Amino acid sequence: MENSQILVSSGQISSTYLGRVLTLFGLALGVSAFGAYIGFNYALVYMMGSPFIMIGIMLLELALILSASKWMHLRPLNYFLFAFFAFLSGFTLAPIIYMALQSGNGEILYRALAATMVTFVAAGLIAWNTNINMMKFQGFLSMSLIGMIVVGLIGLFFPFGSMMEAIYSFGGILLFAGYSMYDIQQM
Figure 1: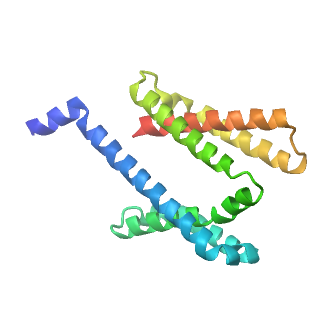
Figure 2 (figure 1 turned 180 degrees about the horizontal axis):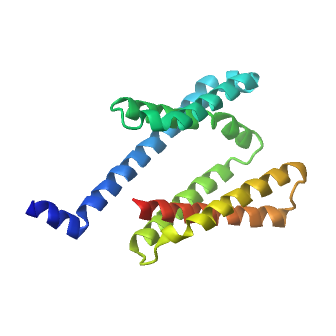
Figure 3 (figure 1 turned 135 degrees about the vertical axis):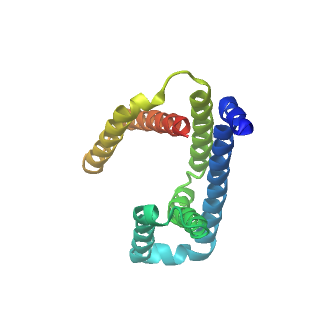
């Protein structure tokens, strides 16, 4: 009993939990990268040839998301379905990767990956070390996400200029960083 009180008071339980979560996150990124590799090298022709394959895979991803509350506590099924979702997420990136490479903009993929990694690590470190309670920003983050979706939909019908695209991208980066800090503190 005394040892558990020491662990709780020293914060080791939450850091162990966070460590497990971040380990699973890292493994999911690896599985996603593997899925992207398989999709790009072995299934790209089929995915580019038939939009129904992509729609089917995306519907399967959506079904996994919507059914997650049913299987999230069923071990080892939850690990398998989580890995399967990560694989499918990477798999569906293959056409996007192909189009970026074909247009001569392959370097943008590396920039996006680097920017995402740096932003996530910085947001995580800030959230872990700050005394500000990020939970109070939940409503603001939710409304910002809705705003980003609405502006994105408007942009489909009325294309943005380069300045508006930069502002929209910056807003997305801030939203991603805010949700990252919120989620890290929630753990």
